[in-house]
Image (cartoon, rainbow, N blue to C red; front, side):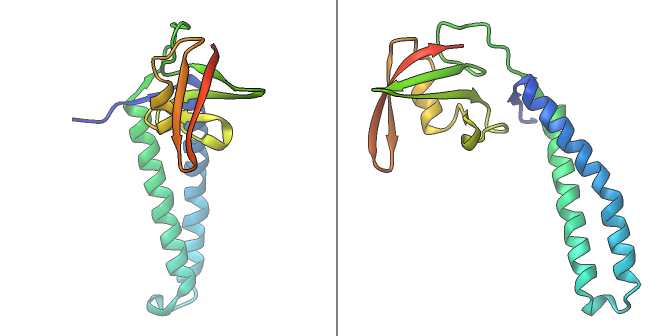
Length: 151
């Protein structure tokens, strides 16, 4: 049974752009391999080894993205009353405010404020309503945030 990937519309667009970029790199990598072959003996040819390794990485990522796109389910979040996939959640801790978007693991990027529903933060927030308190366990201890808004 194939895995189903839950992604946002924006996430799908990002993956499609990434796929297009990797497909366009195929030609560049093929040229690198051909140039490295011209250097002679392949058994001791570092340029050839590097080019083949790059080809493997490009082809692997293309296959991963194609699999995700073929098995993707677009997240539809019509429910603004509680935290769910696709929600944008504003958290408050005193005067500190943090905004997170709850996404599937494929799109997660904490540095950009996109957290996975499977992460400790995502699990702590999932199903909460505005005004609820969410306790998140961190390496430094527990932190409790108030859910200020859900969009």
